[in-house]
Length: 277
Image (tube, rainbow, N blue to C red; front, top):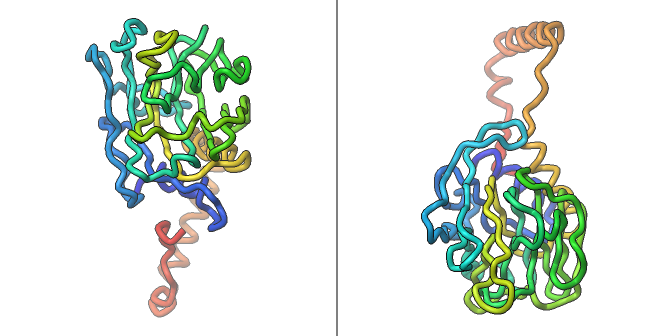
């Protein structure tokens, strides 16, 4: 399991009391496969790319160069939109789940679909509206979702209430059962409805990662997920030269002490494994 997977599990599963658990994590490292090691049996994301314009590219995400996926297409007709689809396959309770994504949109004016849970058959859903998050038709767009900037977004649904989080802070809440998953178990990312009214509310963009949870994240869990995501991407500060010299001296002292320690003492210590967390 890589570092991002470990952080994902620590952010939400640090204590046994957490209700939500990660069922799939996608890093877009040149493929659509889930990160291995979670043991849930999640399948690869489906790349919907009718115009063949999507591509894995190198980009800077919070000061770190990494591979992301560029989804692209035309807003109209809606059948030319490019995005991704997650097939739930009963990994998530259809009435209690959360979706986390770190992505950017090229355009944030007007409506731009983030998540569809109705097989692209209805206009009601989760959007960016003029730079804010909206659970249409509950309210106007809330928060500051900027164009061409990676934004951290979570949709949490507990069967009766949907909550949209931007950078760990709740922006839009809607009392509804609309977000219950359909019989097809398909969740569409960035793809707008193909029928019903206004089927062209689409923007191309880039996605760095996506996570799917069984269970609704509460406010504290959503904030922890955001902080873990951002902390992972920001590189540690470079020590000042004097501090660095002290670190080297301290490291040498530790190595000398270890070399002088009897083998029986070393053999009695138990190693620490991340997998035990």
